[in-house]
Structures are given as C-alpha cells and as structure tokens.
Length: 531
Image (cartoon, rainbow, N blue to C red; front, side, top):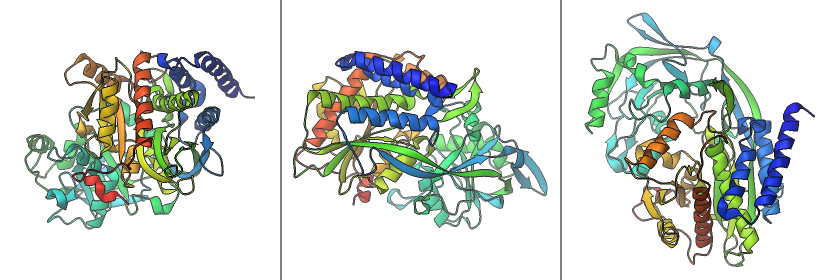
C-alpha cells in the first residue's frame, strides 16, 4: 500500500472513531465537523472531479448513507457514474494576440488574459472583434445589445456582469456563460472575450489566474454540450482590458462609468482582430455522483422526491499559494456534504418518516460548471421518480452565529412560505440575495434543477451590509475562496453549523410533508421551464 493510501486509511480510522464518539451529539456540530476533517484532509488531494481522492470521498459518503438506512438510488448502488471530457491547456504551444493596422500585439497568458477550456476550442482563430455591451438579447426585458451589429464570424467582447436593471434572479440567469453563448451563437458569433468587474471582485486576478492550468471539463454526452460551435472563449484581466479598445474612440473606463450610471452602452466594431493558437491535451475520465433515498411513507406521494444536494468535488492540486498546493475545499464544499450527511443521520436516529421521498445527492463536477447535477437531472437513477423540489447547500460559511438566512431563489416559488415558516420556528430572519450581481443563484447545483423546471432554494448564513459579519464573509472570500487555506485550520462556528443543519432538516421534512407540490410563482421568469 502506498504512503498516500496509508495516510488516507489512517484518516478514515481516526474519523470513524470521531463519528462514533459524536453520535447523538449532532446539536454540537462535532459530527458535522468530523466529516469535514475527512473530506478536506490532504490525503484526498482536493477531491478534483474524476480523481482518486474524489472517488474515496464518494465511497465515504456512500458508506455513511448506507449506515443511515438510505436505499441506493439506482440498480448500480449509491454511485452514479458520470462520463466526462477533460482538457488542459499547453501554454508553451499556445498564444493570444491582437492585430491592428498590420501590427501584432501579443497578450500574456496568465497576466493579460486566459483561455477557458469549458468549451472545446478550435486550434486556431483569427477573427474580427465586436463590442456588444453586455452581450444580451432578452425580448421580455426589452434588452437587445446585439441589434444592428454584424456578428457573423466575429468574436464578441462583452461585460460579464449583467445590467443592474434586471431583477436579481435574472441577473444570475442571464449572467451565465451558457445563456450568453446561446444568444451570441444565434447571431453568428464564433467566440467570446469576457471582461469582469473592475471593482468588488471576489478573488484577485493574480490568484484566480492560477486555475487556468488546471483541467477543465464537460460532459461526454454531445447532446449535453452547451457550447457547441464556440471556437474561442477568453477571460480578460479587467485591469488590462483597455487594450481591447485602443483606436476605437472609446476607453474601458468611459464604458464602465456609463454602465455604473445605468446608461446605455455604445456597441461597435473594434479596430483589432484577435489571433489565437490553442494547444490542448484531451482525455476521457469518469467521476461519481452519490445518491441515496429515504423512502416516503405515503404510497400516493412516495414517488415524488425532494432532493437535498451538495457538491462533493473541489479543485484538486494546483499552483502553490504560500507553499501549499492542495486546495482542500473544507467550506467549499465539504461543509455542504457534511450538512446533508448530518440530516440523513438525524432522520435515521429519530425514526422520523415523511410522506414524500427524500433524495440525498452528493454531486460531482460543480466546480466545472454544475456537470454532475446536470447529468443527474437528465438521467435520474431512481426509476419513476418525479423531482418536485431541490434544496442545495454549498459553502454556507458558518463563520459567525446564525441569525439570518440568506435564501437564493426566495422570490421565485412558493417554497418561500416553507422557509419563512421554518425560520420563524427557529427564530431566524430571512433575506433574499443581497448581492445579486455575484450571480450566486446560477453558480451552484440548484441551477441545474431550476433549468429543468424544478423549484429550488439555496441557503447560506446571512448578514446585513456594512456589518462586522459582512466584513468577515468578504475577508474569507478574498483570502480563502478557491485557495489552499480553505482547509481545516480555520475558525468555524460549530453551533452556527449545527443550527444551519437544523434548518435544512426541518425544511426538507416540511416540503416532503406538504399537501401540494411546490409551484413557481406566476411572476417568476423561471416558471417557463416547468415541464
């Protein structure tokens, strides 16, 4: 047995002892934390999608769900295999440049811009550039940034932050890369260059850029390729993006100022072309969703499922930060997986039965674009199941006492009444997403369910703006989000975590026992997706 395997075994034994000691002590958060100690250990190497560490994490979850009395979700057991395509950039053989007036201006990968390999790019691209504002065409909202532009064969430059005039949930939906590509492809574009916000970025470019060298993935099933036809996807460093507008008569700062003032953005052809050569190493891999069922007690409702989801993957081993190369993902998202593990354990220990079935689902590939949850929704392993609601838990950040619940999707369905009732019983206040421009509603696995027409909520420990709690959350994001320091050596409020788990527990039970299925609100944009 290898040293790494021995280390993983030693961690498993230690955690098993911790769990045994913590049984019956769920209220303290000790058992919840013990799961994180295992899942975020260095021996699992950051649980990268498709890795051996991820597989060990999946086996750990499956074993605990069996212990909690859950039924395997499908004939193959608790594990659902997910086939993936993986791509890694070879920067030594890749290049990116702007060409204007016969002169070539190279762009430095990692500093000026990065290629996104969520798409399968063309080996070479040489195309005109067009600035299209936010790159949106939304007739319902009377927005058409593409009107009058010739985008045939063009690469579209756009601001990735959606306009503030859109309601919060629509900012998230139309802020997604896949939604934008659907519109731009229809207008004839072949690629994109996105420019993020100049202010209020979650992670500094210098750190987020390190991820460009990690593998990027897509589902192997070509029918589930959201980026078909896209030859180029570039993310521009906002601090270097003014180079795109040289010679256009406009500056980046001018355009940003107009956007921040809520003024219409000009849209125009740029005087430069983009020239790219992209060398990619490709491979086929497999990863794992883990799904278990608490069977409903009502024979008329037991084929309706409430799905409690959390993503099991993180980003693996990457470029070192302060000498550490393992991105452990303790809060992102061992914390969410531990939460639904704890809900399953509490239901088992209480013997509580519910009318509808509850599906406990740990998904893979969230960090790669919600791949595992998309696959699960398209290929549910439980025959005959009808999913009526999703409650997703991702990086809920128990960094201070839980007094407020931040609820993503609060205004979209009648699940709002359920979470308000649970919060009132637990003497908590409820807030909608206070920062919709961060697109959180589409950045985790609830979005896969929403796009399939299934009402969904996602929750976090909330806070009011301009408070010490808001500063704590902001500092955590700036220093630990997608960094090796998101490990077990960080301060966590165990009582807040246990209280949050109690919210998920009570909410799941309440939805499972409802007389009626959850419904989209008539005012919700997302009701159009219902089946």
